[in-house]
Length: 518
Image (tube, rainbow, N blue to C red):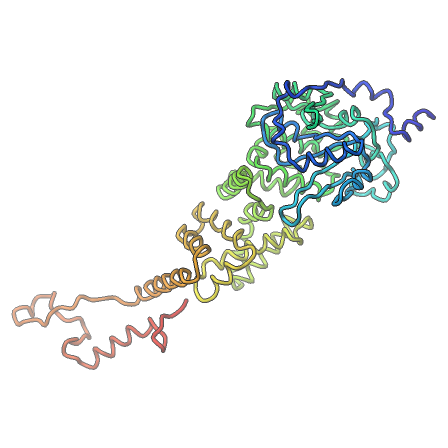
């Protein structure tokens, strides 16, 4: 007991776990073939800064995996033996975040163009039996966790993991072998403890240690397994049978994970460029329902034309390096609910108030409290409220609409509706042209709409009748030359004919002779 207590204080793993630490293999650059030119300059700066201060520092995780596979990573993480406080002291703009897992965000740039390099400290691989036991769970035990460095709940879920250790233990506590490699860009070496390079060559996704135990430690690994399988499926990767077997049963453990964390994991599934592949993996492993209510709806509607189009569009934009917003995709997924509720309410309410009430109802029933009343909800609302405004192309409406901050999102949404035949494609084309036109060109476009509206308004009211020449005696009996009942001779200038002509024209213009605006 005394030895266990001392080991806990020192951050040492008990002897029972040491056999799972794997064996250190140093793989040189000439063997693994990583292209150092694909390593982000900011990640290189973080590694060099820490190494210059005497610490170990490596690029770690998915970035190393992608570099080995010949893919250019989008995100870079760094692992080091420096504590969070030591990392923070090494950089001008660095922030310690998290309580469950304390890490450091080193920030480069400002505004929307900023980049974050996530730096984590090597953690000890501790046996759950050695951790402090907490009665609550991840959602309810914040007060009980105060002051604890390593704690688990009754199911074995790790609630706090801030005990530092050596690199080999840090590798053992990571999830998949292909994510547990360390790359030193200064020496060019890759450090591999669990056969990650071999698994990458065999195209296998394999859990380190016992999969069922690892899913209990952190149930979100269920979602991560699906995400990696979806991302790498196009390269021929498959999940190891032993890793896949406990997925469905372990998914029940997600019930105790905070909704906000599940929401973030859902967005990672849908917005990393493999949304449709992720949905296929969820179905393949029996996870189409039960992970998160909003994700259940996405999976259920993935075969609907409008949602499929939106998911494809999101994957395309990610592949092209363009930004994507969760508000846009979720607005597409829930649009059928809004549209149907709007139609029902419009029977008794004016259109715009009916749409507002329909949106509130959908938020309450589908999104709840998770981001539903924050910026994401506000953006979704604005996208939906724009849709009827696209139909009105008169007055100052188009000018004010095109200047709105969220116009592009609203327009892209309407364009998808046009792609599936929900609105006229000509309307989408008109707004595309109007959005990029000069002021004079916009005036011409609006004038064209006014003329088209005037023509459409006049056409049903004016029924032209072919006028016959004044009949001769010989033609009197010919029905083609008989006058229409009640009509006089236009050529004769009879007053009744003039009055009738004025009455026919009056509805097409106002008192000043200008066209009636719709």
